[in-house]
Amino acid sequence: MALTIGIVGLPNAGKSTLFNALTRNTVLAANYPFATIEPNVGVVGVPDARLAVLGEMYASDRLVPATVSFVDIAGIVKGASQGEGMGNAFLANIREADAICQVTRVFVDDDVTHVDGRVNPLSDIETIRTELILADLQTLDKALPRLEKEARIKKETRPKYEAWLAARETLDAGVGVHQAGLDLEPLRDLFLLTAKPYIYVFNLDQNQLADEALRGKLAEMVAPAEAIFLDAKFESELVEMAEDEAREFLAEAGVEEPGLDQLARVGYRTLGLQSFLTAGPKESRAWTIKQGATAPEAAGVIHTDFQKGFIKAQIVNYDDLIELGSEAAVKAAGKMRLEGKDYVMQDGDVVEFRFNV
Image (cartoon, rainbow, N blue to C red; front, side, top):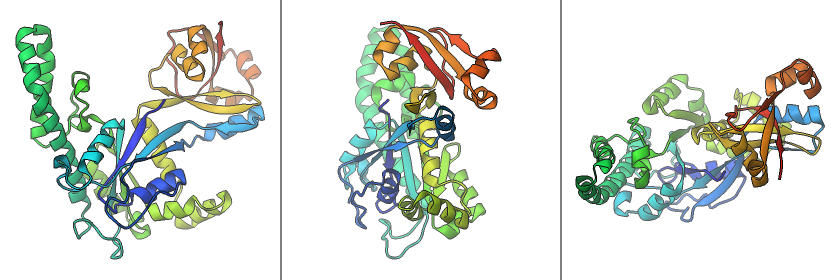
């Protein structure tokens, strides 16, 4: 399921440092605007504690997590919607992403220049929000005259035209269409940038991370969108450590979970994804499906033949499996189910598909 999250932000906000840590890649993390010109794509494993438990229960040779893809996109500046800086490349790349993760700088460091000469998180957020809104207004202004003519001739086009007009008014008021809660279905053909779901990542230093009042203020700034707080530099150091050393390092810093793990999980959920699980001696694996996917659709993720020849899905609830200790015990307790083609998969279903090809 090749859905991607575009990492955006002003130059030197910490995007590439965060991306490097996420993917353990070394893209050019230079203290220079537009150091990232070509988008870098990284596939990141989604933390899932259930896999280790299943792996132990089934003596699996390997554990395979679900994944989410992140794209590191060139820094944006004011005027991007008019082609300033790398504006045109930025907008084209972000248009291809399925969700947006905006990295906003909060840390203060005189050695790392800020494009506006001062650190101001709210201003940075507004800069990017404004550029996306302006780009969407341009898209609508080009598309509306054609649809208006069509709506005069075809009555069935009228509701779509009215939805586009409502989107135009919303954007004119300085609000993105997703943020405004508009119905996105009639706007689908426009590929609007503000129709994408949003995650905000605030890049703080260690002292700022410990400041609950500051974190509360920043979260309020972007509500109801999800806000994640991390120190990208700290996270990049963390991924270089051995697991035991990293755990000790986190404990000393008073951090329960690495910010990157949180970002991967929130990103996965923001894309509307969930996992079903398979387990056996060869591997325990989390498979990615859209929320609301049916059993045959889930089977097709493993192999198209599974979907074509789908008969039934043998479903075990993960919590039941752990509580009772084995599939045999789950079956004996009457909690193993056979589900048909209309079954809607639930996150954490442990599945074995029956099919005929």
